[in-house]
Image (cartoon, rainbow, N blue to C red):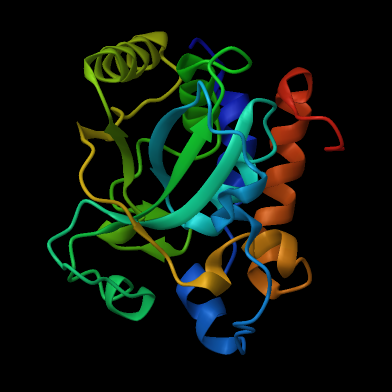
Length: 227
């Protein structure tokens, strides 16, 4: 998990623009009838797969980054970790539901390991920023790993500890590592958001640059067809 300040810096700076996820969503009219391949399991072979649940801030970014990796079968944007039994995007954006924007990742461990996903997780956001990523501010944007078993917990804690010891940051990592609880898929229009809305403001000015940087760093781990 060792890395350099410069690597994290250019990834972090990708998100430091004026527009925020919630503001962008309010400005754009939603198209509710678009296909949502992320939620369609009919074309996904689930045999031998495992699940990871991760939050790096706005789930549009997290989804776009992680679904580019080879071995990732499906990524669903949603909410978890809160007390509201029926969370909606509008409610979660208030920061009062306790939920974090996150993604549920179905992956093939024979192709990509949980450790690989953790590396992608830590390298694609600033894990030292408490309840904030760029201009997305609030507990709903916290850095969080929801582990599904003891082995995931062990690997997450080890990765966090090693990254702290590496000296990559002058501040401690604040990523929350907590047991996975019920995951609530977000509204349909949030699924495959970047793919469906590449020209939307937040997508063009925040997600696209971040994804381009990510692809250069993880070029050997990208799925076929991702450029």
